[in-house]
Length: 171
Image 1 (cartoon, helix red, strand yellow):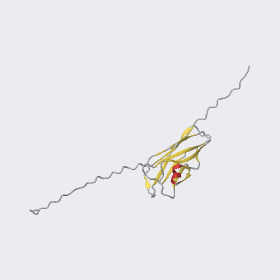
Image 2: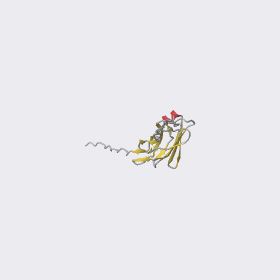
Image 3: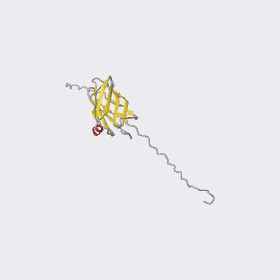
Image 4: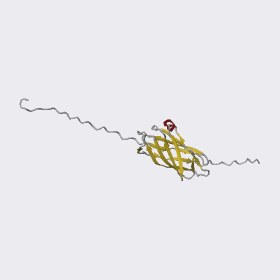
C-alpha cells in the first residue's frame, strides 16, 4: 500500500455446541402372577437398558409372608448375552445378581423367571413384591444411573364356592 497501511481480512468461525441428548436410564419390572394357595406361580422379570449399555446388574425383591422363592431362571436376553444369574435369600429379601465373564451388553426383554410358592392357607389377596436396591454397570464395570423399577405382585384368588349336592328324595 502507498500509505503504509496493510489490511488483513479475518474470518471468525463459531461452532455451535453439540448437544448430546440425555441417556434414557435402564429400567427393571417385576411382573404379576396369579395362583391359588398351595400352588407355585412363575413371576416374570423384564429389563430395558434404555439408551445405555448394561453388562451387569443387581436388585432386591422383598417377599411378603405367604410366598417362598424357588431358584431364579435366566431369561432369553441373559442367555443371548452369555450372562449368569444367581440369587440369595436373607430374611425376606431376595438379592438377585446378573453377571458374566464378558463385556457383552444385555438387551431388552425377559431377564428372568422366579418361581414362587404360595403357602397353603394364604388368604385371598394381592401380595406386593417391591423391587429395591437396583444397580447397573456398564461393560467397563462403571456404575450407570438407574431408572424407575416397577414392583411385582402375586394375586391369590378366593377359592371357588362349593355348591353342596343334595341327595334326591323320592316320596
